[in-house]
Length: 211
Image 1 (cartoon, rainbow, N blue to C red):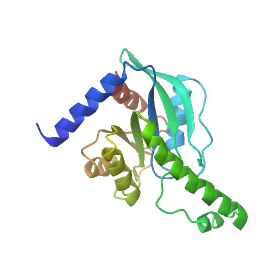
Image 2: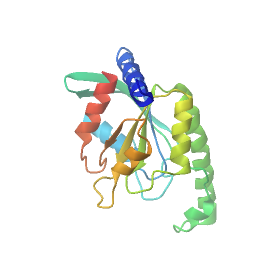
Image 3: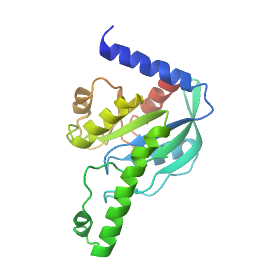
Image 4: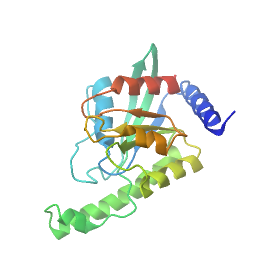
């Protein structure tokens, strides 16, 4: 059995075991502006009628991890109850000057940069308490970034199973195949969290791996 097939088998077996748990803690990770909170909001609105939080074109809008317990997802006759954790965007460098370029004053920019840095640290700490990870990537961006490679390496080192989500396929410049080619060792689903495109396929993947 090849390495990739073996990994995928172990991934599937792991999530089948999770079905017997009361709630599986699943973290939504990824770089800033990849669409993590948009996806979290989509999941919650579809299954609870609620939302996780606000979204913005400004990077690091989410600067604290947010958790919603007991979200039951049903698909293909099965269901799984999840605790969804929406985490701040991961970045290797957060410069307050980037916020100033968006029109914020220096004090506000430094405050946001400090909170965003603390949020990254918090997101990394959450990895210790998760059962699985949904890694969101922007399908219009080059997937070979230091953040993506570091995040995937970190999760593999912790033996955390992950599902890669290639988001923003509603945009004409999206190329989800580049993400699949970059990280073929992990399962991937291409969606638009904003428009709901292929979202049923996403739920099917969750049900297959959790059910």
